[in-house]
Length: 199
Ligand code: ATP
Image 1: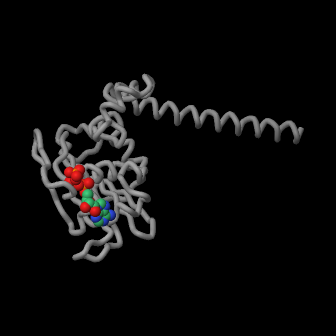
Image 2: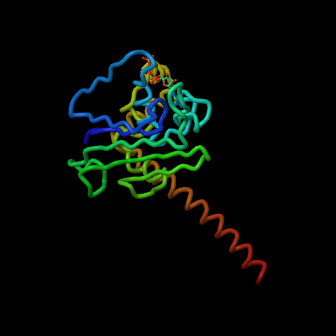
Image 3: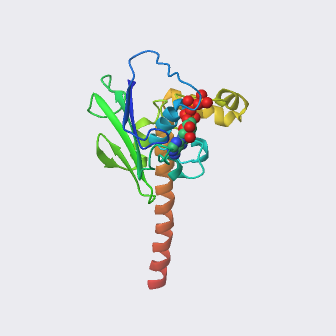
């Protein structure tokens, strides 16, 4: 699996729909300071579900929408799509290409799509679990991140190895199952109380 391309529209400095294609192997994005290089990697993290405006270098989530320039009016929504070649079926979907889209409107409304079908953020998070691609995973190493990884607590570092070894989704499912079990136990207790009251 590899990242085939990204399309940005109304996202940060990309007012017009802009499509970038990546080949296999290494791609370098070069350009003058402030020309929007980091906005591309911000776009990738954003579409994968980044919820922290600060980590996208903004004050709030609407700051990712093109805010206008001397020559252009601001726009009302921002959208990013990233497309993966999935011919090796790394992603558990029956498609050779998978496109994930996120859209946000100035009103605050936001949408996620997988291959143009509306979905939940949870579906995107689960799709990329254990692939190393999720927003917190190791495929995107921002400036200063290596230092952060080395100086972080050993439990946090362990998360990176867990993602690489492919056990994160099982841990997430275990947590969900434990929560269901706890809720069911609480319900059972409540039912028992009612039964006692009725007897
Ligand atoms: P450097 O090489 O200095 O790190 P860069 O090429 O990575 O720069 P970015 O940080 O990606 O550049 O882009 C910064 C530019 O994006 C700035 O000109 C900023 O005004 C513009 N920008 C960021 N958010 C928006 C927005 N919401 N609307 C319009 N322009 C924006």
